[in-house]
Image 1 (cartoon, helix red, strand yellow):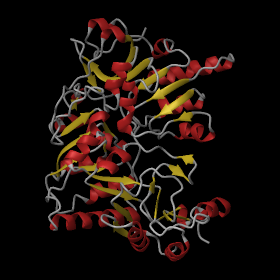
Image 2 (cartoon, one colour):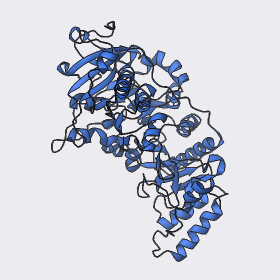
Image 3 (cartoon, helix red, strand yellow):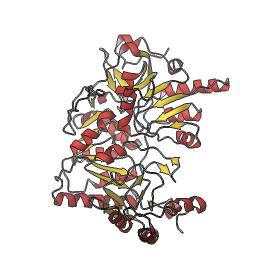
Image 4 (cartoon, one colour):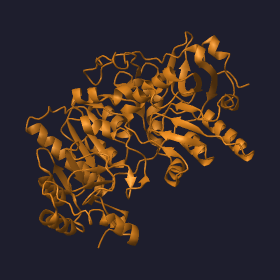
Length: 506
């Protein structure tokens, strides 16, 4: 029997403390599991690892054992990696960042449903994705009266707890107790026809409770852990990232001068990655004060802006810190309690709120085409990278939506600006600003042909610009329709050339 943690203060739930192996033994083959976790934080570590060992034992006996795994977003090697290695996943959704799981998805060994993050909870609520058997939720502490202090992410935890038949809690002593009070858990959501407006009108507003409500009768196990969150290091901004950041800062300065937004800007949303972090760090020197953020993840750059007094408040659903960030920030996390709000992703990614607040969204793309369509998920149209995540939630509903990428990849062999994207995640109807290291294209109020000329001239790399001009000029003359002219026998030839020769260059 595992030792009872001092963080489990409720006497009823303390009686359910057991080892991770004992808890994993309660999970049956074919189960749909709702796991906590969002972008490498707040995910269960001990029970999934023990479950992977159980699946290995079953496989050695010739007994098939797979489960379906629903999360908030990406998790870590103790969950996605461990289950992928033993071929233990039937269906995975909605977002994955683990390399081992990616291999199984692209090999066809695991089914993967790529889905907007704001859609996940409601599809489970509606019953469209099947009955959830067990929720496995990492928490920071269980209070004497049964209230639960959430962990370093919220994700879909409220929905998993509400909809699962059974619940396993992982109480992680590595998570700072000072997280208590930072969360805002809203229980006013309903399902049609009983939904009402979400009463959130400011990015720093609190409309719920700091605690998770966990029905004790559903809890079948409590497991004590002390395993830290996955922490992905960020690279120092390279030249391309710095140029992209500079283009965006200049654009925002121009928008303020034109009176399109206040000098505090509208609330910021930033995706995960090195380019996004470069933009955040560039904002330190920008002439904007009292900024706010309404986003999904808290990266090092956003906390840095809080420390510098440039950012007044920050709303998100998870932390996504580098190893250095965890070391520097988590020991003093309590000092940010009045500035940081952690919400469930049904709120952080809710289109109604994003539209109401006028969010400025900044997300990365794999490639964009000359008409403004964006692929943010698939390599060469077929292989899944990570998933659409929340980029669609924000891009479709933002006041101004940015998509960013270096103008080339693979050492210059790939142009990220192409005649036609090999997979569409964000259509030309949603994107407003495209940015590369070469420049920025403001696509607002422009027809497809006007967008094409602007993207080619402002965003494409000089090595590929002549070929893009040639394609567009010939398409304008030869395409059967002149609204969005394409040469269909050539539009994906750049991708075919790369797969055949290793370069998009002719």
